Length: 460
Ligand code: UD1
Ligand code: CA
Image (cartoon, rainbow, N blue to C red; front, top):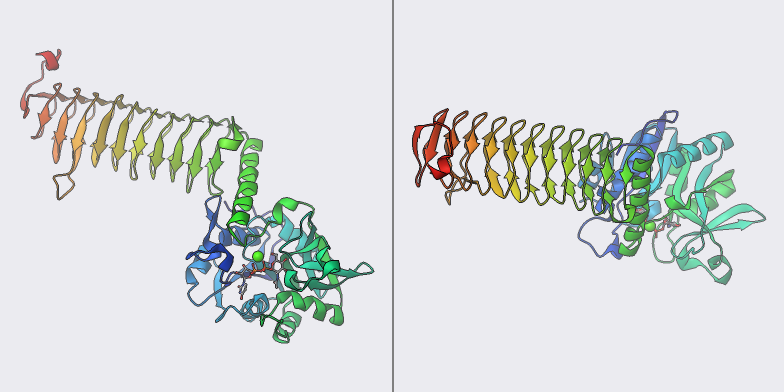
């Protein structure tokens, strides 16, 4: 989801997102910034917040293999390469060197997926008002473990003390450094270039606080909403961030008119849209690029991934992937729609129906256990229980076409490639290997065609 652009644009400000760290504590082959939170990679959440706050440019600092990380950040984000992961100060220098003639630089740790555009905009406003050399965001937390502590002397910021360097006094400070900094570009580049390595050999971005204290004023912006603070260093913190994000998404939807019967068992990715007066019943998962219309009822236990659905759609316990549903479609329970399925309006798919890469025309009914693959089914077709499109000959897939108004008898085997013409019928148990002309009846094993005189061909 892209944050709405509701803040004054700051076209000559650049956001620098630090995402070149090793992420050692994740124990993962996937770069930390690409780990999803509510289905959306962390770096994209951070970039969306920066875009929402109206910053003119986004630079993502990545490792030499990290090009996909910058691409994932989305629209217009440019990569700056940190050749070796020598610390956040080193990464920030790589970023600040790539910002061109930006006036102000906003540095963001790439592992803060919960930060909002509102917070970025408010911190930016504070920095501009205070005319500070450096502004950074802090929060007061119950357990400061793992964070840099904000060391103040008579109320004024003096330094940020990293966890590893704390003593009994500084370790007990519960005002922490969130990982968001704002500074004027020229001063920042100089301060970063002058950083000295820490005892562990890293360049700490946090050491610029000391330089800023010596140079001018340091301002802090205290984050009131602790729901934005969570960083992600390991999988435990990833799960915590995930829980906060999922709650936030559900509350946003509920406030916009979506009923969620059991929020705790309902999972909605950050990228999903749901229309008003839609009800999500327990166990429903809306994932990926899914957009659902208004007045729908989904679940219980419906899983929709990359699905577009119109208004008044009903889906019982079913799994739908990569498919498009028009309005007034009714699906399930126990259906499986596989990618490439297009279901037109007023279609009813009943129990145990599997559809793959097929178009099902408006008003068509497939009421009971059936497989429809690589097919084009016309409008107002009735497909009887147990019908199978035999689309695979062991080597290749073949297509089935069924015309408008056709009636497919129970247990029909449609051996593709095959066409069943408009208003044609197949008898119960027919094994259809030849095309059925419009209006004719196919009967037998294998089926032969004869004029369709109505009646009950299955018993004829
Ligand atoms: C950092 C801060 C700490 C703060 C915490 C909260 C420093 C020295 N410490 O600690 O004060 O409380 O964040 O969020 O900055 N990165 C690079 N290149 C590197 C190292 C890191 O790009 O060489 C990136 C990482 O990918 C990550 C971000 O910088 O997105 C922060 O690095 P991380 O290792 O998570 O810093 P913390 O130890 O959490
Ligand atoms: Ca971190």
